Image (cartoon, rainbow, N blue to C red; front, side, top):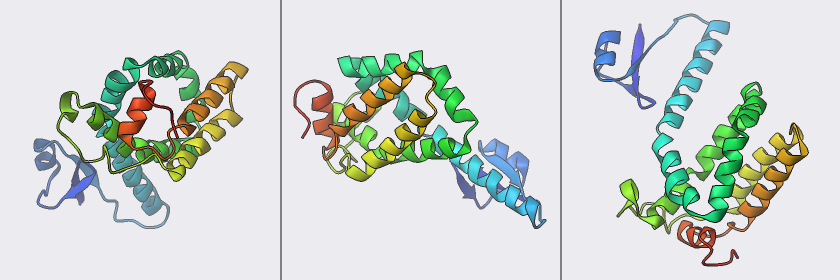
Length: 195
């Protein structure tokens, strides 16, 4: 016995792994057991659904990198840091389940703001979309979530250079607190000063 999942949601009218594959879903067997295997099933399903949810954000992240960050001096510098220190960051996070969870939490917290910046920029898939561009702000709470992740990574930083980059990132992000995505885009492009 099992169930079919598509986009992180259970599909109710699919009754076999073959049917599930036909619609592009993922079939998950249920163990029917209890105790430790039940906990394992819950964790596996929760992680699987989280990974599917993160996968759905790939286009947004890619577009943000290419349409927003790579188009500004500050953004290019940040992308350069990321690319230069990708292996270091991966090494820090991969074995630390707390940091993995905090990274996911942070990513999901900033997604609406990033989407709003893409909408305000109005290129590609984001042209004519206005779901978030003037309805959300980079709040103090969002900043705290990001800052907490930066602090936890800083605590295990392998070098002074890496720590300096994290410090700079945290300082730059602070200037966006309270801004809408449209205003943050102007700040990033050098047109306005952050409040």
